[in-house]
Amino acid sequence: MIKFNDSGSKSFTQLTKNIAGTGRSIGILIDGKLITSPTVDSGYKATGITGGSAVIIGDFTAITAANLSAQLRSGALPVPVEVIKTDRY
Image (cartoon, rainbow, N blue to C red; front, top):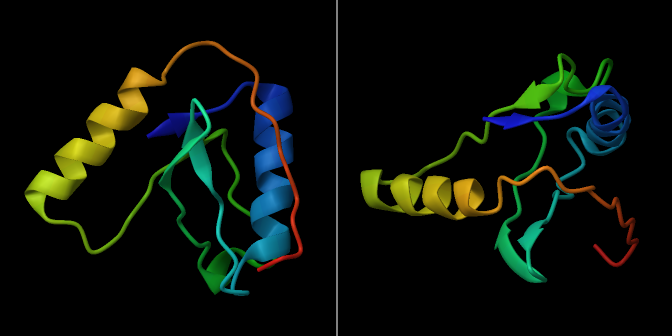
């Protein structure tokens, strides 16, 4: 689970609302390295993902899920998040 402060929650809600159902993804990077790039289901198009947290769901094996979890936990520090919009995709 990814958790956000109030400001991050508002930004994440708006971002997910804008890209829900478009096939565009949210790149999650740690130290400039792409860790994963999930898409947002079209069911969130009206509201975005609200509540200040998110869960990545996908077709993971137990091993790939554990590896992704470990990578995300390693970057779980109270650091600012930068939203970078690109129209390349």
